[in-house]
Image 1 (cartoon, rainbow, N blue to C red):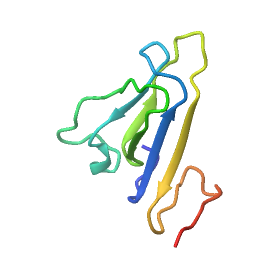
Image 2 (cartoon, helix red, strand yellow):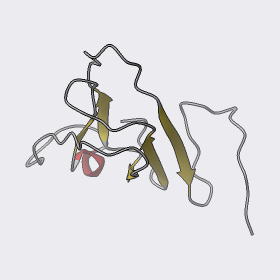
Image 3 (tube, helix red, strand yellow):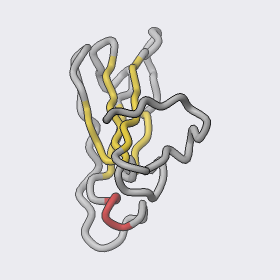
Length: 101
């Protein structure tokens, strides 16, 4: 996970279609409910094969990782973290943020 604070969401958009060879992002659904620790029943790991431009939105606290890129090509992605209220991204505390009324 990226942290334990509620109110943060990651948006992941691959700029090319993902395959098993170029390493999709693997998620561990349910881990956000246990402060990032796999306790009790946790759903099996998921690694969605998104097409270029498709969006994956997930809770910041969900355990996730990029799988190995075994292809010959780079794997560019757009990655944004959204915050609700006063929630802060602990990984990038000095990042520029936008506030909306």
